Length: 487
Image (cartoon, rainbow, N blue to C red; front, side):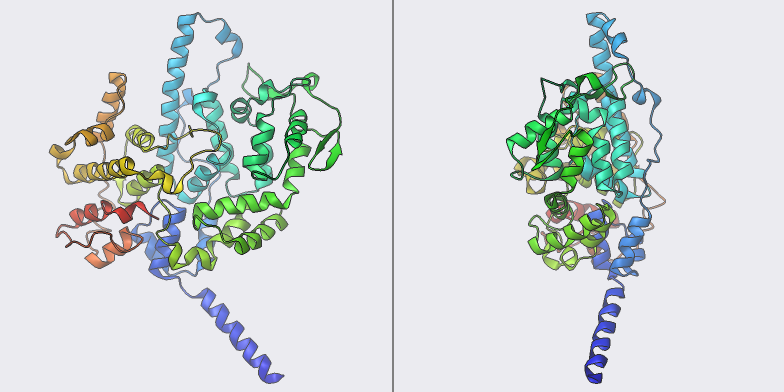
């Protein structure tokens, strides 16, 4: 018995030591690339000295709930409905034109925030939830609503999923996007009720059409005040009759229906499965998903619990799961600019580039969001991605003569045919892009070729060619390698 106890304590001690061992540079780079857009040398070195658990705790400790970039005041203004009704047809067209332009500015604001935030993990998670609780400027229009939804998602990004779900359901941008403003007693609109089940909580196939109809009745009367843009409940439009949702009956309102959805084990499983595909691999491990989902639900939907379990799991760090996911356009562009210390004044060109690559920030293609994964890559976008990387590093090298060579490069590097003002803004902003001397060459020029490859690429280069002699040319060479598109 004593001998068995000694062996048990020895094994337990070995396990604890193994868990607490420094993660090393390879695992540090992998963790940072998946959670923070980029993995610069200094950050890799800092995280390499930590254990997996310590590294994840550092990420969580640095989370922000507020952006650091001030928003231009005109993007947070609201035009009262009564004022809009007083405008002539020409004035309304001008208002719409200005609103669309402000939408571009709002996209640029968020892109800029992703570039400068001290907590890239916070913005990474905000982007994840933006693609889960989808709304779009194309339908919502007023930037104030989309801006405030962005604040809401950031505030809850690593907080409580239940609280975020309740907040999103009352969010004016979501109410407009999913037509709940027209949901009223006797004439229920089922759009929000359907999506809150299929996309936000349970997942497809785990509810009936009757559940949707009954839930829609619970959300009647939820709308927005046209004069202020704030959430407004209209009791006269609310159906206060008995509803039956997922086998439970009562005089439910919308908040009570959300609680019924949160009580379903499927909700935790659906969210964990989605987070797995975002951070671990495209094929979720059913047993691991179940394990993490139980902990997630038992914690009353604490998102930190789910992320801590995901990011410290053996599956996350498994060799087969490294360099197995494709960077989204935003991840590619933000990551490149952060990774190599590019200075950016006006982010407008990168908003345009991201759109051309298929990710129009704050305007996903439909309520299901961007499909992501391998859908980001095809023959056209892969070439476009390469051309964008080429342009960035040619700018850095001061070779302006190579900035507009070839039809594809012209198509990729320039905004779509539109107002000359937009073209001029694009060109002026690109002229201001350059390498930050505080980061370059100090962090990269000193790296030997082998270390540089390990820093820049998540796996062995696809093209085994001789490395350039100049450090900046080496970086450009690696950034143009297909493996750079992976994370």
